[in-house]
Length: 414
Figure 1 (cartoon, rainbow, N blue to C red):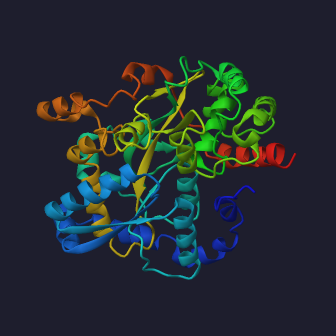
Figure 2 (figure 1 turned 180 degrees about the vertical axis):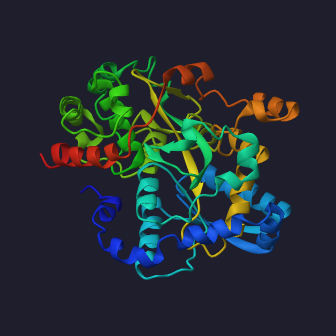
């Protein structure tokens, strides 16, 4: 049974219109008033406080980066204690929504990690504090503040309500002891699946990774990928590409793992199948994520990565502050710290995370530029040139839920 995402709940929230008249702008007023102070005053207010960072906790490398590098450094440099609370983003937004309905002005969440449809839902329902990135010293000093990657998030205007934390590209991972030549396009992939029944599957599209897999296929079946990512969803225009996409998924279903009777509910589940040798491919955002998994012995050392035509979807992910954060000063200081060159450099190293950075390298001093350039991302990571030439922007957030519905109706219920 497909698990429906919480964002379907958001689409029917008419009741918010009635209660927002009194509350509208209060959280924005609060953060605006705070940002009228000097940055030094904000740091002083944040000192000796605790900040609760709510974020997806399904990756051990990411968790280790937060717990063993970010938290100690933030404590030492700013006297701020960072608490990482693992929770799926949809559940975080559901909690905020419940608190919004109850008029709870002081919650428990100070920072959330989000992007895409989750950001759109949070923004549309006034679950965020307001605009703050213009006042972050590290963002202003080391990032291209006018970059379209920071102005739009899956087609939704950011309006300074979230700060760029990382950039990722979608890649496939495979075991080169089992696969000599990975497929170059989706037709090659179909042939390989049919020749190796049971050795491939993908997460169901209620999962972010599974949805991205299907969006790649939609890009492939459109006249041009840009006809998808350059405009909001037009269901009539997308009818033929969507039909071809669903036909493809139906054709490969009998040769999937367990004959398509079960789709992994998460990337974690798919990774487990890959690490156990049940399937010979996995996939996901972050072109370098396999490095730490290989180092920890989760993935085989023979793991390598590839991208297929028509390209590899990439995006920026962000940090934001909820409307009822009890410690907005601490949240600002923590986010500014996580955007620093030092934190971004550590995050880019293969262990424990290995994620690419949205920072502008040319804005760094010569010594720091050299440190970034000397990072060896590892054998599982494709060359920068290959990643850059295959990069495709994300589509509008409306495609995510629409494709999930299409898949559920045509692949599961048929």
